[in-house]
Image (cartoon, rainbow, N blue to C red; front, side):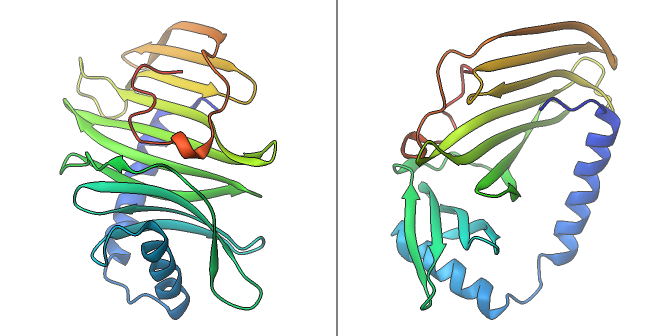
Length: 211
């Protein structure tokens, strides 16, 4: 859904960044080491690949992004009752285009069999935030939605956004709000161009032209 409080959103990003910095050197637990090893093995991108994931303990699902220097994959694993993890679903191999100004901020659970992946990109004088929402529905893992929040590059005020875009690909609705110096100047909605694609077609550039 669209964020109704822009200032609160910006404060959230700043606080989250501080929290991540403060925990970046924490020693991983045994369970975390096991999940990371399972993701790296399933992705088959080399032992030096990096992982970013979220585990939903109640159902045993793990959604993770695995990136080597050149390639990446998005995977869903499920914890087995006898130990270990089984590959539930995966994307095709995609190019790792993340540089120093583009990075995955979080992989966060949002409910039963629902996850979101947030990507922050430094653009002009602010941060663009993209969120890819995943869900298990109609018998498959799908890209259920896509949100994009763009900074106000004209004022370079971190408290302001220029545009908030939200596409729910399950309901086929897109909502857009445009701002000028923090004030709403335009609202619009339309039907999405297509329905929720399967996880297999996922990559971080799939919505360059917006759904």
